[in-house]
Length: 540
Image (tube, rainbow, N blue to C red):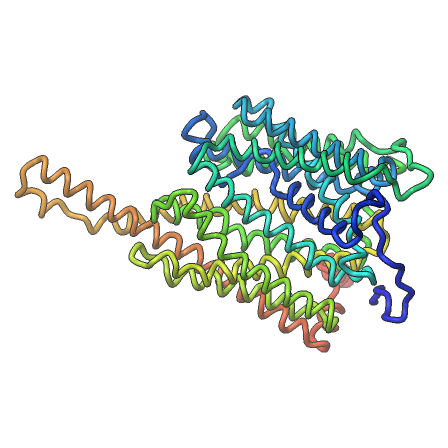
């Protein structure tokens, strides 16, 4: 069912009453777009400056990833609160408050390496980031699409999100190269000061609700429990490979505490009259299927974060600013993917099945491109096409899945609760799971391949050489073998990604056929088969 307004619907003229009358109407939306980029380029930590941070502090890769996922957890868990905050506070209070929180968080993250301090700081930074972004985007939504067509809004939204994700990594790496990694935090503090100045000089307090909605009745306890559980899960997934997974007593303890925490959360969600997350969202049609497809897509795209990092750093030995500049080539693919999604959902309003197939097909092309060109002798410029396909896949799948979720969940309050679940999978759990999965696969295949290919090395050619020359030659051979085995290992994992993405592409192309789709919808769930089988056994 399509709930979007028709062309004959009455469209209200776009206004931004929060601006002072002296500000020209034409530039008002663009001022808010500038503020969106200010919030989106902010963060608790910046992985673009990874090597610089590791070189000057005691923080390791797992520590920085844990801080990154703490920020993402803060962003995800705050979705059910966004409208409550918008209807309780004015635009000035929300934007100035978010900017001040982000500024103080960046001042703290650049001055301490204590993980006990950095974790809650990055979590709060994520909350402020999503609150500021939502406040800006919700005020210019009708300017972007006067009909409130989410087939237009969600693709345009991902222009800001994906540009900032890629651009912030490149910017942090460039600043760390020419200055120091702390200067990226200083720049973020400066952009937050810009937001505060804009709000104080160009805007006035304004709230869309004349009668402010109180914050009473919010299940804060469950929200805190969910946040703690998310941090526990990210700890297991990020540190799992380093601590040998559940051979570690520490991870066993965290897993046991997480299981108890999950039981408490489910108890509260079922017993509370107004729970933080309503379980009724799973009763909407296709919600579970959308979340499943989201998890698969994010696991496949996890190759971007893990396999590319191994290849760029360990095999090719690229510096951070070079990697950041190379990854900028995913942006043309992002913009092409946005245009495809706009044309598909906003203009033609075609069914989304084939669009999913196009997205997974782009993942397959990206993986196949990397698979066939993983060689130290290949110029790095060759990978630009593959990176563009990766950006195109991300833009198509992220925007179309969010649009599908909105089409399935019609209640606005439930929609933002479902966005919480969606983003937990989309930018949090699947990303952390992908890191744990790919690092474990890489470690297993690397050890297996070293055992296989290392057996071909002999010491016959070294025995006739002097000891020093033999040692140098042996080191050179081992280094060459290690790089070759790394390339072979990455090819193996990319090959598996190719197979899974090809299967997903074929599945959605088949689902686009009405006869196949209706046949699949009539297939009962596995418990139905079990009940029928038990009934048959009893009859015998």
